[in-house]
Length: 448
Ligand code: MV4
Image (cartoon, rainbow, N blue to C red; front, side):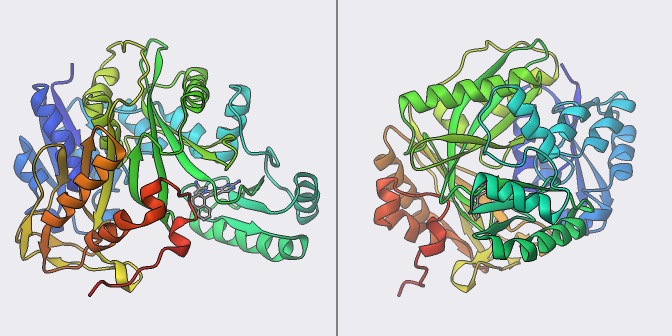
């Protein structure tokens, strides 16, 4: 087992990883920017190294600074968390060159899944259903026209270097293809320095359902059930739950098998997520694979009662998994609490938290790095807490979450707590009747 893990991250996920390391008897090293001097991950780690100014590019995204921190502290592994360098193949490769274990898959695997066309081609070979489409790069407008005509409108143009919704254009009919083709290429070029575009049939109002998988270094892969992440706005997830209210026993068997086949085919090592689009007829299609631990991992932890960070560290150290897959026995919901004003177009609301009281009680978990007196920095992601509730049924879980959010006191900044309270009251949400289009029509008015 590792003796000392450096956590190349900040905020709640850095704290989350430190907690598990402590329980496993592993020493921890925190890295921090000058804006995060007072952060809890700095206080709770065994050692902490300042790696630069507030700007992420010069701190949490700086590979040389992080490798210097590894060297001076003698850490033998790096946990990348999510975001920042978590899906950077070069970083994973440099770790390997230094003889430091990157807790995650190989650089080749990260790159393979990072390029969306390659990921899709790989999944076709693995026998995983994918959305009908070009099956490769579109080389010209004429080529785009031919493919779109073939699969039928509406179609969606996606950047092969994209993911998470960046650089996507929906095209309803042929007249709109030329304009969108140009815009998609330009956007992709400036955002990713790669103008590679592919085409897919546009699935109308799909659900976003993802499967958590885990693979060890011995070829075993298991799935740890699904999460429904359809409640999102501008590709930012707001609430996730497991099981999906849309799931059936037979769909879980089919999607779970596809997720495992995906992992086995690529010899996946670590925890990962296979994202699917699911249409109204319950046809499902591979969308992307995330090669990191995700923000919403606690939803799965609560329904299967396992510490995913512990499992992740164990497989990175070479331990075998049982290979058994899981069906959720409980229901869990996560509400992401962001420092944003939901009633002003979710605009960021950084500043000092003057008062902070977090909900507690049976089945309530709050993962957060915030406290009274904490300053939410404008430099980083606006997520300041995750409230995760767990209960026997979905209805009880919703009631528990409503109770928990009523207890949550955060003063000094705006947060998404009031938004979640409205969402949990919505009739269609309560019926589980929602898809990725939900937020387009959701009425957001500040209550009296
Ligand atoms: C799609 C799609 C419909 N059809 N692909 C969104 C994030 C990125 N991972 C891919 N995404 C989508 N891909 C096909 N072929 C719908 C989405 C999608 C979405 C699209 C527009 C607006 C909001 C969305 C929310 C979730 C998923």
